[in-house]
Length: 277
Image 1 (cartoon, rainbow, N blue to C red):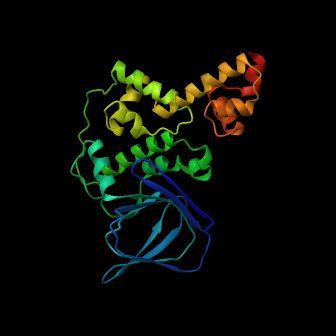
Image 2 (cartoon, rainbow, N blue to C red):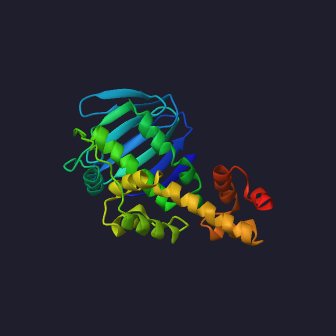
Image 3 (cartoon, rainbow, N blue to C red):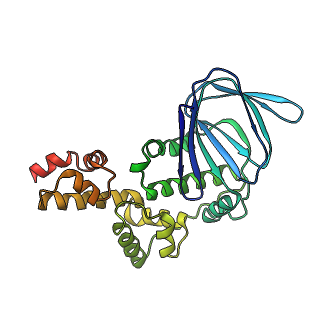
């Protein structure tokens, strides 16, 4: 494996596994009660031969195509080419919880798919690649937020239920908005989870994320990044604290992480902004 990475978000575990081997490799997975596995191919051309009870099928994966497997069924396949997959694993209990939060209570399974295109899901999961590669810079708030969006997409598109979207806008009450913002600013490092904040507001994760975005115009993580940058600007203007210390004080993993985010928000690096200020 030249790629073997993992992260854990709200109700979903994420992995990235890749191999450059051209030799045939056989995968045999016994049945288990772990739930469902979803794989997304990050590159085109991967092929595998899957063995069923009385026959075998061969599939070629295009870039951004997926498979969905029910892990309660045994699996056997020959891998005949290099691969690079972003993988998700969802337990039965987590799937039911995701479905309930997406107003699709009753969904308890995902439809089996093999080599089916899903560019929307691929773009959502690809957003986790930087977090998988640099877990020290990954905010748990960001991971949970993205996991909620990914879980909602899966139950809406592969849960076998019709989706009825409410036209009524969801917004936080003034009290819940202030509570959520206070909790987020008290945890600038982003290590507080979406579930913690949603529970404090007595809301589900999915409802909270949607309502927060409707109320503030941005997701909780994006709002928190803005607060980090604003706090950093205060420190840069009022003191000569080294940039590395400002980065840590404002919840960034290190100075390079701080510089990238600050520059994306402000348009100049922290050092240049300090000189101009």
